[in-house]
Length: 70
Ligand code: SF4
Image (cartoon, rainbow, N blue to C red):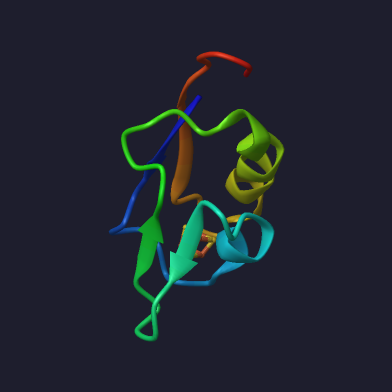
């Protein structure tokens, strides 16, 4: 599956980084970087990715396709 990040909506709460640090990181200014931008989430990251989507308090993360392993 892929994740689309709505950077306009993201408020830098960091829940995604907390549950999926391999996929998301915030810099010192709370700017989010999504490390699998445009790519499928690696199989080993699927569970954490789904948790991150569910955890985001402003719904800035969206699953955009089922894809392999979803
Ligand atoms: S949990 Fe949501 S609001 Fe917080 S940094 Fe991640 S995408 Fe942004």
